[in-house]
Image: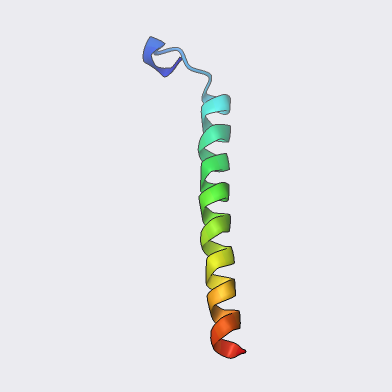
Amino acid sequence: MMLTGRMNWKHGLTVIVGCFILFGAATIVGGIQMAARSAG
């Protein structure tokens, strides 16, 4: 799809933002759990 040079920019941006949210959420949850363990 991206190799054709005529990709849908809105779709591509949605996929990239979705990946950032997924990986960011995992990192944030891990940080919260680590902080909760050290505080508790």
